[in-house]
Length: 301
Length: 272
Figure 1 (tube, chains in turn blue, cyan):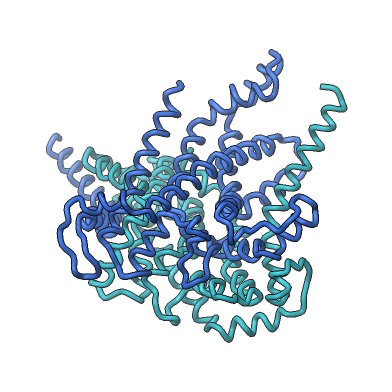
Figure 2 (figure 1 turned 90 degrees about the vertical axis):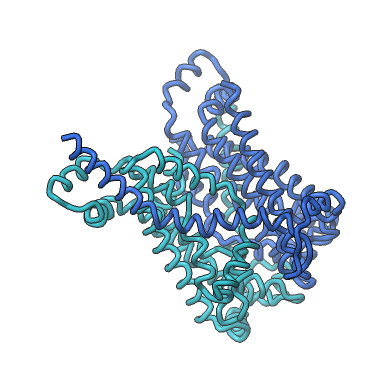
């Protein structure tokens, strides 16, 4: 009996590996090998095919590179400002839409969700056409008296960043709202009834009941949004384009790390070693932020 | 709460939600209206139906081989999606059904790749594709997307709901493991496949950075690349750009409206 069992275990074990093998192989070739390869490349210096081992030269170069510092700063600005704004808005919208007595609930939900069906390049191009100097947005803002002059969205560093933030927020708020909505619908509503009878006001119920119960989903949306924002590329390149596709915005105000890596590798004389070093900054940042956010949201238990 | 406050709260709720819904939908309306207007009208912010639709379509057609570009996108998206679903569902099933210590470790390693930013892969991948001689081919676009940790995770989570009695009964009937997968698991998990199909198809259809790097000649380009290059001209013809943007958005929009339920299920299902 024991040997029959062992035979069966072996049979299941072989099957297990066979089912998993194609995926494991593909991931090994197209994910694991490249990530190790780019770690190796980050120690190489020189341009094109003429490279040599440079030790930590690339890392030292990061600190003396004003373009890298600017790209890092811009990327941080995008993520520090945009992620909280978007997630607060998404959570607020979700809690409004969670009310079963709300009329046109399905319609409103579909409408707000619709942006995340659009292609990143497609919507970027639409935003570009709406935010041109004498275009729709500026004439509307001036017409409504919100602004007394056209806003220089494409030519002023501050407004260029605001435009990118508006664009990403438009695209991803509905996406995050759906996660909050799904989580809210799993909450037992009787807890709310009880606290309402106890006289807890609406905002108190929101912060002391809803938010703690949504913590896992909030963690998930914060981490995925952060990773997404750190890799920002499509929007910047397609809203800020012109002049030879450098896509860095006025005074490089919209230069992100991903755009910088792309430009280092594929726009100028390729400097792959240094570009790989910059890409590892994103790797480290993503890992670090994920760990920090994970513990920050867990500690409060 | 007295009636006045309640009335005011309701008013502001509806006003706020109404504005948000309008702002969310408006760019789509703008895109459709824009396709009927001249480029000059578009950058002046004209909201209304124009008469330039045919001219815009003609300009778009003259700039690129539209059927070819559309076919390239469809082909890449369908092949990527089909292969990703096969690979990921096999793996998700394998990890969940045949558990072992070592496979759990492999699974954790695979989940870790979710954190890897594409920017850190693209340079070695580009070098690799050069060595394989695949630069400027559609396989260069397809291959790196096939091992998707997210979709494997999604299938493993969904497999937890696959009744083990079905599997046990089939084993008693003498079916091989691959037969159980093919004849029982796949049909039972139809809705999981549908949801995963939407997510993977959309991601592939909208993929931009990687095709931008590996597809160099015009006859290989996807619709997404075409929209981008038309809009980044020094003086873009926004009328033609709008037509191209409609073409780039239409397939995902149709998929969304036809399969809205599976769409949301696919997105949120993995975190439950």
